[in-house]
Length: 253
Image (cartoon, rainbow, N blue to C red; front, side):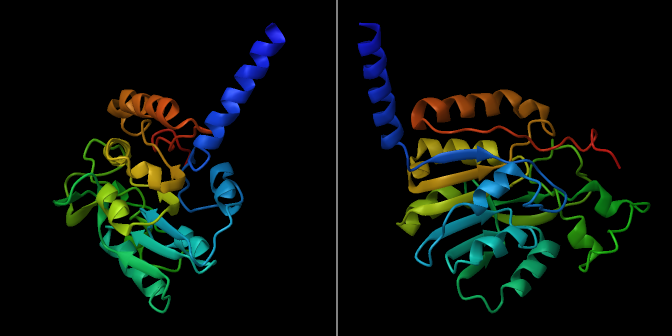
């Protein structure tokens, strides 16, 4: 009887996995400069085989290092980046790439105008200069960690840039096609976006979701992140590897 119950349970679990095999949610760890060799989550992104007919979305594209990797297969890539200094480089880098669409907007759960707060290092007079190997502007270097969430650590609310936001769920649903990869590094706005993706069922259009969470940099977010992960578990049944963004106060210089 016990063996029969186990077999029945295994068959049921297999059917569940097959039913939800379209979705994989993985978290990846933040790096001040992207390193695919050192990061388990990003290495798993590289293992996903993309075709020219696939569509992928890079939210928080920065200067386009991840975008470039996603674009190698000639897939259609939508790269969202709200920071002006980073977007200037992103746009120039893919000016001649017909398969990459660069959009200067922050992804959110609504369409509006909001404030983007910069990395506090950008406005400090005694800030350390970018590393010698950095070939872009200092403003672009310090675009890392800019956020529309004022509670996030490591930013300053003494300065800001007005930016447009876009409802990511609406964007995905209007595409009318499956999104093979959705990479999300949006510095604290992921809670609102993930909730909207779930509530609108836009998440069912996504095959692979890579998302950086920032509960260590925004402690008020910890409960929300736990609730969202629980909902993903119960609604989508998937493989999940958890890694959080590093708290800038805990990083070594």
